[in-house]
Length: 76
Image (spheres, rainbow, N blue to C red):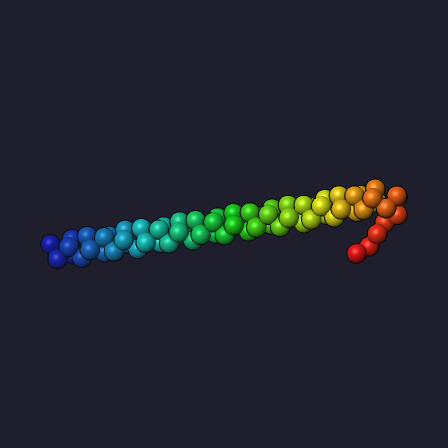
């Protein structure tokens, strides 16, 4: 009878260890996915800001050239 109890205890321990390992793996995967999503969002925001900044600078450059040339757009 003691042998059955020891086997049951060992089986329960194995089940607990497996459950803990699965939970840790799932948590790590979720954290990695969240980090990847955050990095992608940051990269997209930086690219959008850069594109808008280039557009604004181009608009300012064209406005300055139009003022300097008396209303005519000068393409360089």
